[in-house]
Image 1 (cartoon, rainbow, N blue to C red):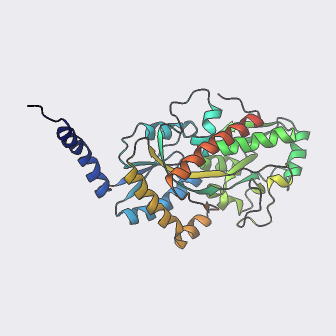
Image 2 (cartoon, helix red, strand yellow):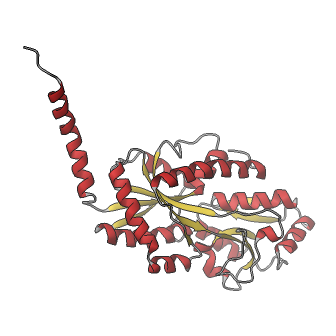
Image 3 (cartoon, rainbow, N blue to C red):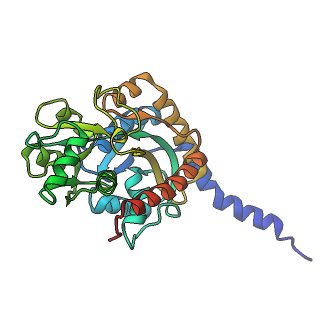
Length: 322
């Protein structure tokens, strides 16, 4: 008698799928870790903590922040890429790890597209160019003129790709010589700007806003094409360096292979969190503009587009990969 294999295969397949389906139906049953590639006190960290609290309330499980700074976001990216794709390790990151690093480094131990599951774009974090008060410049043009008259005597801090690409683009277009000083974290870069160890810093508004509203630094320009609502009177870099428009995007990923049900659940909860006025007010106070992607697929396409865009920016700025 010939025994059909189809029922047996169906039973075997059901046995394999049942645990995965049960997991997605009950997710989450334990705390979720949200990895941040920059230090506590950075702009991304501040955004992550606001979103994590609200997301945890929606998921009815704590969302715990895990800061893993280092190597221009590479340390955190590699950690998440190797994590179990069960929805319990997430990654709130920026254009640094997923748009700029592939053009800034000859070798990466992660692939920004293949090694991650896009969940949702969160928004954009503008940056602003600030100088130490000892620099005799009250406008970007005056800074450019001063740098031309004193080649190599000024230095700028660069804790992330946005700071680096912004300053290198300005340097190239304006034809000035300002030395690059790498930093591991935004708070330390701002501390050294205040202390005068560096004279120029393109800082994210999330970590730099408090100092930018004091007389300890002088804010000359914002990197976006339009003026900032929370830094009134500060002109865009593009008003002096024509065509300049640069900002930092922020989004949430999981490792490659996170089940679609979990991704869709996280995306849906984030849509609700980011639509809340309280969330928008808290993030707005950081200078952060909420701009969520509607679907994970839309975010995935955005990531691919930004990867090409930042690669072009970096090549145009003349930054050589390390």
